Image (cartoon, rainbow, N blue to C red; front, side, top):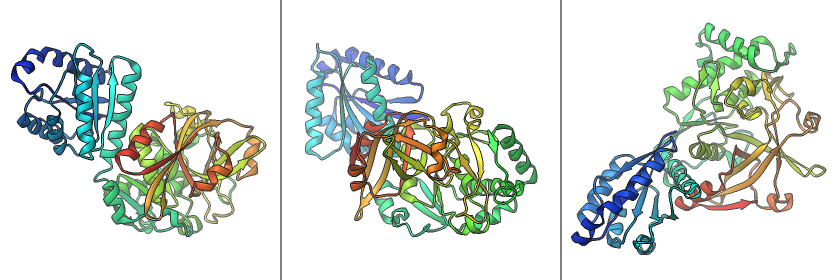
Length: 467
């Protein structure tokens, strides 16, 4: 993941003061730019000139905009005329952060606060940060801004593909085309599930055989039962995987949701294998970028997963909020097999992840058969999230959580063949269930609460954080 962040540095409007302080400004530009480069994923894009006139404010902001930056830093090391900031913001349509360097010999903080007050009066959304960029805690906050900006900006112009229609009557899975375009800049393309079936017929025999050998060599266990999960049924799922990838490529899709139930799961096979490995950072052919695949054509779920992926660069989870285990004080999340295998061990080595995975025969609900992708998610800090709607207005549930390991026998309380994530949350079920308005939930490893809150701020969306 590469994130382009523009840097526009402002100065005093008096020529003599600007000239006198050019070295001071340049020193802090160099420090900021160097520090961002060292992250390895942030690419700083510098304005050509330190802004000290209205014309420069216009010219440099237009250049930065045209450079395709995901976000922009307005940089203040000395006193600057605030109206330069007010002019520049007119040409910046990506998230802005005002940054004042730790430089007490010069009134950079004064300049930032004066500029911030101007933007506040103009109703221009922005973040603010003060401190030494060489301090890891300050750099971390700047990285958080960069990741948020990446998600906000990258969504614009993306295309989400719905393969199939509404699954099993879920209102919460169906998107509003115009609202998605207005609020997020996302277009929606509809594709019939028959395209998976049709495409599967054309998948090369050798690709299927190679994929099968890869699964047999790396997956911990394949529980063939000669009924629901047979060798031929697993091959059919592989063909469906490649057919789905072809749909993505042919339609230039950026993320997808696939209905599955019940046309596919009752007549052809479950789409579990596709959901797992399309979401994974690898597949039968080698390493790849994770690609969001939402089960049951859950579009608000796909939207949540895409935002999480754009912020973190990592695979994302699709889960059912299945049960609260009062005896162990754990929330039980499991779905019919649509979770990326990455979460089995959260390792960069796919072999380590797949060693903990079992392909189990499809549950009796799904008469066409196929494999469910079973495992228990690795222990670790997680951030869970879900976009939901009150009427037509979106809000985001953000949950600070921890995945824990339990005895595998406990999985038999729910549906043993499905993947499970056991989650510890401080919020009580009474409090969570009173507000949480979806059967699905999504997540990633790590603490990404700050980034999600910032995303909501820039997109004018309410959020609720459950500790």
